[in-house]
Amino acid sequence: MNTSRLFRCSFIGFVVLLTVSDSAAAADQRQTRPNIVVILADDLGLGDVGATYPRCKIPTPHLNRLASQGMIFLDAHSGSSVCTPTRYGLLTGRYCWRSPLKSGVLFGYSPRLIEPGRQTVASLLKANGYHTACIGKWHLGMDWPLNEGGIASSDADARNVDYTKPILNGPLTVGFAEYIGISASLDMPPFIWIHNDRTVGLPTVEKTWIRKGLAHPDFEPSNVLPEIGKKTVAYLAERATKSEPFFLYVPLTSPHTPIVPTAAWQGKSGLNAYADFVMETDAVVGNILEALETFKLAENTLVIFTSDNGCSPQANIPELHKKGHDPSAGFRGHKADIFEGGHRVPFIVRWPGVVRPGSSSQHLVCLTDIARTATEAAGVPMPADSGEDSFSLIPILKGEENPAVRDHLVHHSINGSFAIREPRWKLNLCPDSGGWSPPRPGRDDTSSLPRVQLYNLNADPAETNNLASAYPELVTRLTKRLESIVADGRSTPGPKQRNTTPVTFTPAPRPQKSPAPKP
Image (cartoon, rainbow, N blue to C red; front, side, top):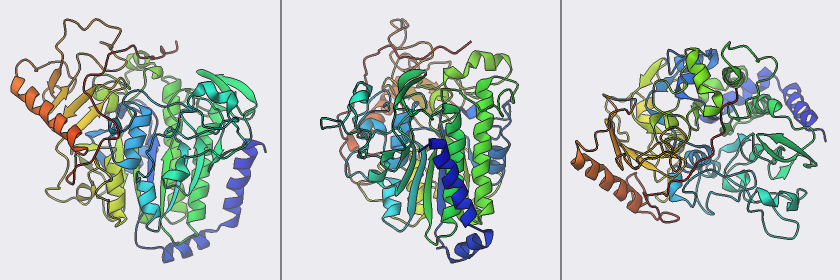
């Protein structure tokens, strides 16, 4: 079936069958537990949202409105400075470096990453009466069956995959009752939609968007973000007729490469194509928020919006700087880096009746905290062997005077470099960026640089003055604290756990592939 037709028909079908009165009736019967919607942008920088960075030059009216109705977190961080590990942490509440993935990201044909038997926020909520759905980019691996038996191990197996068979160990295996989306990033084959555990059609042609690979003839990257928005609205319309609460995870594909704003948005920002794509991303979020209002769901829905890491250099950051826009909001570095620009991200929470509108927080938070926050909001206990690095944000959201919050955070870069953060101090356990900005591991000469970097972020948020030699005792203390967090298998209170595979602090520097910005 024509892919775009499938989406159009299902969307129209949902809307035609529904009425606002049906939605209101269902809402009246809905359980008191909140619905939960998590929207995850892809490579959106802290400085790309007006509400989180007043000097932002990109109009983001819908996200600004969401912030005015809720709380912004100004010291929020992704679990990693790249895609896959952050997504693992968001769903499991566990740092990804405890898993077998110690550096880099997965690709479209990579096997599953979330370990068998590991609980996720989706599986916990589903087991306790929530309907669960994921609409968008997965990027956590799934097992593609091969024609001769077994599963694919990499993109090299693409032509040996049996696309007529169910895909194993994807979103449905880790707690989602429904899934529609793509297997990895928008520039990673296969370029085809997946519904639950099957592809929508067959990839019978080859196309190139940054990378070359098999594709469905109708698949076009510029259509993906709008379709995610439409499918999300259709899902909300359907859930408005049901009485059970829902958990909806919407990992967007934008503004990640390929940077493909639709014709209606091209040139809108006056900056460049990336900024146009950010504006379209904001508009899609606006459509989702409008649907919550239309279907009488907003008042009983906890909404979290954030990004999986900092802005990518593919945004053409030098060009944006020349035009007065800084995607990293004054912080050093960008996507892939151990520096703040790699993982300090926008984080906005709206929860009517709980979160004070227009409020903000300086508390240290991580995307791993979403798991425990969501389960606590739903009244679902987190098992002792789950959510090992997830702290609940509920006390902050409720405006408690002295909320019990995290006092530390572990950062991780694309090449596996570590940093440990306390509210004031940050220790980077590498001499370089750990990523794609200078000094680059494996590319730039770092022989004359100190082996570690210590920064006072209160006085030096741009990480320019390395104080490691001035405070050796502090370096030792922070290093030992990180060693304890690793050894204990968790950073939250509770019984010690085992890391899936051993963890070390000294990855071998190697060149990282960072595509040069397009002219």
